[in-house]
Length: 342
Image 1 (cartoon, one colour):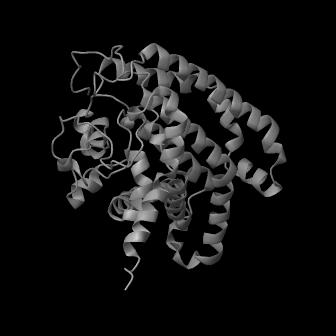
Image 2 (cartoon, helix red, strand yellow):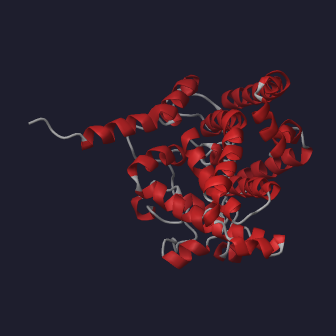
Image 3 (tube, one colour):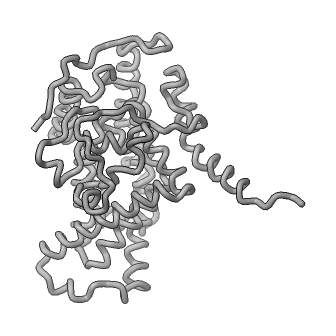
């Protein structure tokens, strides 16, 4: 189903500031080792000090298994396959595998992992309890009699549709776009780009997804397992891979269709909002019909601190600036709405 093989493979090339692939590869290895070590230090030292309620949340969501998942050879095999595809059939042959964007996304991945462990775990359990206590009148009571597999399948479809609508809103509402623009800012889409999410946006996404699953009475284990499976798929279609998956594109999001969604070109704006199933874009007329184009990606706001515009040594600075960016935009929106002095 790979629609074509690029004639030019990803090769080493000097960056505009004179740095090379080797330099960034070394930084990437060091950052990966430090990140893995930090994960185990956190679990060994900090988790036992968390409040009892949070420890229960970690157990309920099976989050305690994450350090061992990090050592799972199958997980690394999946990464290896994705990296191989990025080398073999890159959407952008000029992009280095160990790109500056990948290194920056590694920082976002670390932040999101810490955010999920420290905050989202407790938030998800508290939200589940709140929905059951105060929004039980919205629960689909008849769904309780459905077979678990049917109930879960329907919840997945509705969740994906609601996710499509939520995604559409994050593009249309300026205050929400300020958060979502962080995700769209990546000029070098890669396997980790799906993890470039502002922590505040993560709260919005988890609230929407969990609410749908709870209202349908989906078991907690399935409510957690499905997002984990979905996240593996979303990481694949964010990778720098040249494929539209052939006929599967009529059902699923593909690396090609989602690259168009991330396109910086005006003709691709507000297209391909789907997160798993592409059927919603076809139903609501937001699909891009061109299935062979692989455009450049990013955001066109000159205020956004793209890491590619700065030397590699400034990555920590650009990371913090990207984290602060939504607040800068919100301040500008408030100034625009403030009445002019008379």
